[in-house]
Length: 210
Image (cartoon, rainbow, N blue to C red; front, side, top):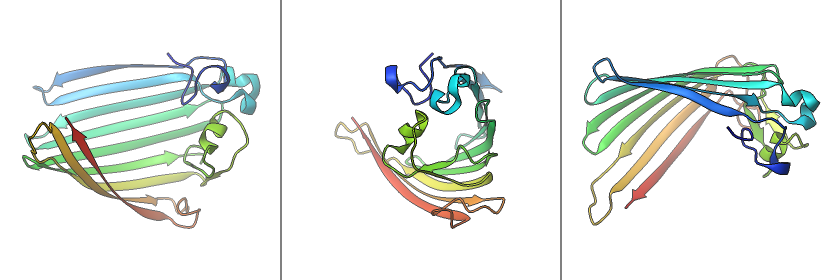
């Protein structure tokens, strides 16, 4: 149980009712190849500044079901279903995400991620223009944001994880480059200040552990 999504105690809480998580997991299914996890969350998440006292009873429901199946010693598939319903905003989002990871060599892992995500009101996929705009919006205070109309998003990510063995007390070293392409699948223009139907993102990071 907690005070709510992305809020704190006292003046940092946007309503007067707690929220919380619950879930279950099943592992070692199908001869140890399959595992399933369900996570849920429920509680009021909107601000009383936005909805008045209704914010204390209008529930938001998160539902996440994921499963991982080891196809072979090198290849693993993971699928994930998500559904969110917000009573206060009268809004829904839902998505399906698929992952594939292939161990090409003992030190090189290839990764794929594909997603279809539907925001049926345009209220959840939002750009926060000012530095503190996200917290201002969470607390129901006026701020500057930018949202696309209702949109079905498609996303494709290809990446790799390189884990060489360095020794010398370094227990973990990995470099993870990736390229991602996002696109509206229903003709809206949610990217680049609402000018483009799609965009590329390139990124990489490194992890060092001792």
